[in-house]
Image (tube, rainbow over all chains, first blue to last red; front, side, top):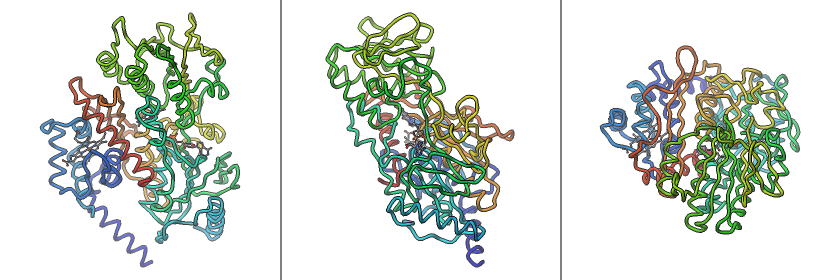
Length: 99
Length: 433
Ligand SMILES: Cc1cc2nc3c(=O)[nH]c(=O)nc-3n(C[C@H](O)[C@H](O)[C@H](O)COP(=O)(O)OP(=O)(O)OC[C@H]3O[C@@H](n4cnc5c(N)ncnc54)[C@H](O)[C@@H]3O)c2cc1C
């Protein structure tokens, strides 16, 4: 029982962190799709940059700049255009909240 | 979980542990509201990720991954082995990390049957095991009935190399043994098939090998299609590097309309036969038409197309309850049959299974696909897409997003990012091994 309560509390906390309040996919659901290129939980083993723990504002700005083609890139311009402001907020909270 | 089921589960878990000689569980189990047992069939691009991401989201769920091979050979980057850029070891991976870091119970065995009503799977050597939910990610099998004279036995002389491993090594060895001035003939399959750009990346990297080591050799592409994935980018690359379109082109592409469809093969003589002509090869590579992996057929998970219909929000089969199908075997269009798509589908499926087993409604899904291809070791191209599920439950590419490398794209950088992609997706699948 106590464990269930604890678990429920941690789910609520995780939801708040990942910004799951908006109607679309959660920050974790969206963020996990990036792992094929950026590594599990955003820890990259290659040339692609790591996303884990990036400051929330930085990740948001980067995604908006890719989306508007302000920031040149090989592939992120094409990817970033797939996400709404709310999606970007949710992903920024998800990666930014990682320890 | 009822007492009855829990007993059964412990029994199964014990049997599975004994079969592999591994411990029962690599990690201490945290208590969870749900518990339960998920079996995953197939430790490839879909199955490894489903197993791992269920454990990451809810370590109270026990996950058993049943994979027939001890070593996984990745199809992505197998073309670099065929083109002589990497050794076969570069595409070999083992399951130790999934066991030790994610607590996935690994059983190396072949699944021979699925009883969806009883929720059991039968294996060749480890008996029968029960599950609460089952994930099936067996990849593809070949429609050997579509090319006369080409079957499993013939593939030992004339490789398909469309499942990586010994077939990859065989094709590489044949290309190495081929004299300068020889002809490599490759038969490309009709849609839908695993990895739409894959044959054309192979052609590119074989051309790269010939250009550097056997420059008088030729490549004849016999295609069962009139157009192919990333065609403009591939042909521009072939023009730049391999003289495509000139009298001296290393690559000749014969489309379906120009009698490209291979109807029969003489494996002993290495001859590919189309409706109106015969093509003598020094090395012949035949990639036949495809269907969902054998076990999906045995288990009645396929429809008349030979592939498995699923619900896109959970990847649960629309034929059998509590059975989820992901990866190449699933009908997931507009997502292609690619490793990246299998990875993305597996994560949607894993999250849905964790939700369902905890009595929650599955959340809104998200999907991405990317395929990098190499035209030379330093010339990379890509296609990407982001998909969303609409209010009508249909999945479509987000308008304005995704697409191809632009014509003036940085191909050198994309070749570097292709390598990075491989390192990261392998880490995602095998947890660092
Ligand atoms: C040459 C080539 C290049 C490619 N390049 C790319 C690329 O660059 N990018 C990309 O995204 N995709 C690429 N792909 C596609 C990619 O390989 C597949 O889409 C991907 O492997 C699909 O994953 P899967 O889980 O469905 O099947 P697989 O990865 O094939 O895994 C299936 C697993 O199930 C096991 N299995 C099957 N039946 C049983 C059974 N009955 N019991 C136990 N185990 C079983 C098999 O042994 C296998 O390990 C390429 C494919 C080829 C052929």
